[in-house]
Picture 1: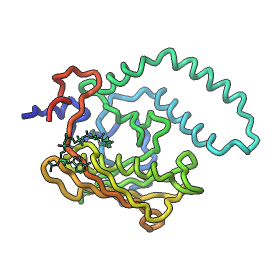
Picture 2: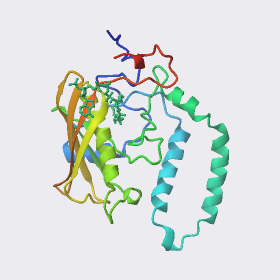
Picture 3: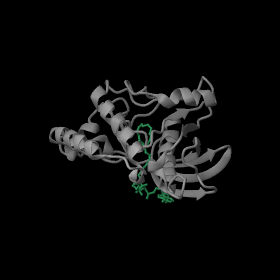
Picture 4: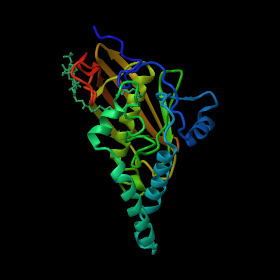
Length: 254
Ligand SMILES: CCCCC/C=C\C/C=C\C/C=C\C/C=C\CCCC(=O)SCCNC(=O)CCNC(=O)[C@H](O)C(C)(C)COP(=O)(O)OP(=O)(O)OC[C@H]1O[C@@H](n2cnc3c(N)ncnc32)[C@H](O)[C@@H]1OP(=O)(O)O
């Protein structure tokens, strides 16, 4: 029988989590305008105050990411920016512990897990689309996001892999919102209509059914009131070893 590790373990945590402190939340007001004042974000783990400089670096890098994409034929002079960025990298790189150390530190007991850095919505991950999920009383979760040029696939459209990535992540939230968790085992996706860049996308995910270790989830992406993507997946409740923990850590349990 597994012991309850939920209080100390970011991978095993269940139930309602708490907001990430110190994180800017530009999407909450927008989402509440769309879905009503009572829609709450799916709470994330309460983290000790983020380093404001780290948040700021992330924000400046996202500004650059968005400003750089497609700039090539504009005549912009980037020489000074390149030099400043080289200096910034020269400052940060020597201070950054090796990746194995940073990985383990994310998964320490009571630590943040990968929430700050995951590739969907991680505020400290500059490649992450800024997805913010909201939990609904009916057990579903939703997110509204507008993606820019860095996420382009077909002309003017969202790359299908981005849609798949965001929905897979939203499945994780859908599980979590109803107290389940698992690994994606099987994932099927139908792209019904092109998904536009630069226009709001409304995503929804929910647990359809679950039995034993199997959790079936569904999700959709709509834009302009039209269905663009629908997906279904099977999650299997499973544990994975946590980086930096010894072999008797909860990752071994099932
Ligand atoms: C993710 C939770 C995070 C928690 C953090 C907490 C709070 C954060 C808040 C919210 C969370 C938000 C976001 C979460 C982030 C991301 C979500 C994305 C999730 C992923 O990014 S995840 C990575 C990709 N994922 C993998 O990397 C899995 C690799 N894989 C395996 O690790 C194994 O494959 C495993 C463990 C899946 C099963 O292995 P196993 O040995 O434990 O079990 P076994 O094979 O016996 O299967 C048992 C029964 O499932 C059936 N079954 C199995 N596979 C099937 C398939 N494909 N199709 C149809 N049926 C299948 C069997 O047929 C059998 O059925 P039956 O019992 O009826 O015979």
